Length: 508
Image (cartoon, rainbow, N blue to C red; front, side, top):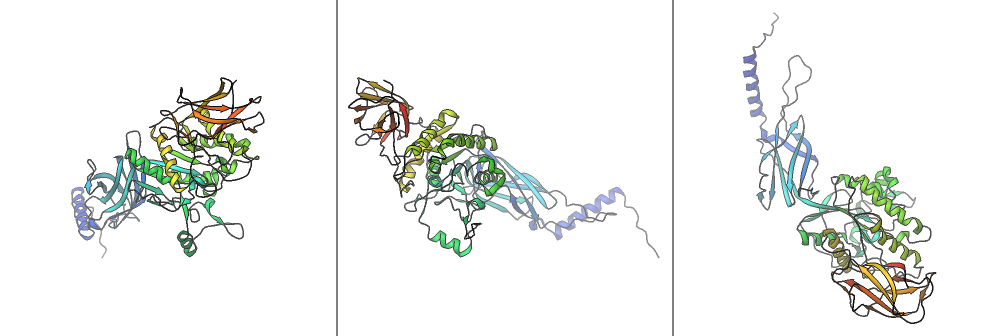
C-alpha cells in the first residue's frame, strides 16, 4: 500500500522548524563552534594607525564544529547553515579595553566568517578574543599593536652588519615582520636572508641557482652568526621612548645591492626582485606605512654607475610613493659613510653629494650623515654608533629638530678666510677637539694644502671659518668630508652632523 505525505500548514511548519532548531542545539551545542583566523591578524602583528590615531582590524576565517544543515524538501542539497553572530573583545593589561568588551563584530557565512574591529586605539599589546555568539570556545590573537610601520631597505648598512655584542634589549612595543613573513618580537638581527620567503635573498648554490637554506644547515648558520646589528631596532626603540607609539619594522634590505637591482621596473617579478619583494611585504603588512628608512649607495659609487645614481634614486622614491598610494610618504635616507679604502674618492663623494641634494629635488626626503660614525669593520657602522644614527633618524621622524647643518655658501673674507655658512642648525655649531674635515680644491678637484686652521666663527655660530695661507686657485671649491675615510667632528647642539658635501664654489 502506498502512502502519501500531506502538506504541513504554515503555522505547523514554523513550530516544526523551531523544534528542529532546539533539537540541533541540544545535539550540537554552540560550545563546539570554533573560529579559526586565516587572514587579517596574527600574533605580534602591528597595524598602521590612521589620522584618527586608530586602526580597523578586518579578519576572516573558517568555522569548525557547525551543525549539519537540515535537508530541504525537494532539493538535492542541504540548506546553508544560518548566519551566526561573531563576537569580539580586546584585552589590554588583563582588562577589556573601554568600548571593546564582548560585542558583535561580524557574522558567519556557511563555514566561513568575517569580522571587523573598528577604531582600535593606538597602543597595545592587545589580546583579541573571538567567538561565535553563545559559544564557550574562544579564539585568541595575542600581542597585537597599533602604531607606525617602517620599511627598512637598501644594502648592508641597513641590513645590519654590526657585531652582535651589546645589542639593545627588545620591547613589548616593537615587533617585526621577519623575512619568512611571520610577525615576531623584534630583536637583532632583524634581517635573515638565507631562508626568507622571497627568493631574491637566497644564496646561490654550486650551479649558480638560488637555493633556500633549511634544516641543519640553517640552524648552524644561525648559531654561528656574529654580525647583524643594524639601525632598525634602535630607531624603533628610540621612537617608542619619545612617543610611546608602538612600532612595526618590515626588514627588506640586502647587502651589496645596487640601484639597478632595486629597479622598480622589476616589480612584476615579485619576490624574485628586491623592489617586487618589498612591495609584496608592504601589502602583506596592511598596505600602509609611516615611512621608509633607506641606506644604500656604496655599490653605485663607481665610474660606470655614479652618472645615473641621481636619476635612479629619484625614480625609486617616486615609485615607492606611487605603488604604495602614499604620494607624501617620508623617505629617510642615510648618506653613505666611511670606507677604509685606497680607491679613488671622486665617485664616493659624488654619491654623498647627490644624496644630500635629493632633499631639494623631492619633498619629504631627509638625509642624515654618518661619516663621523665608528665602524665594526672596513665599511659597516658599528653596533655602538647605530644607536647614534638611530637618534638622528628619530629626530627627523618625530620632527623634534631641524635637519641639521646644511651648507649655504662659501665666501672669501679679509683675503685669507673662507667662511662657510650653514642653515638648519639646531642652536649653534659645536665640535669636540680640533675642528676637522674641510678642504680647499682647485678647479680639477685636486686638494690644495692651504688651510691651516678651521674654527666656528665667533661672530656667527652658524658659520665655519677656514684660515688659509697662499693664493686661492682659479675655480677654487670647498669640500667637507673629502675622501672615503675622513675624520669629521662638526655637529650642532642637537647632535645633528654636518653632512659630507661639495665641491662648493668659493665666492671671492
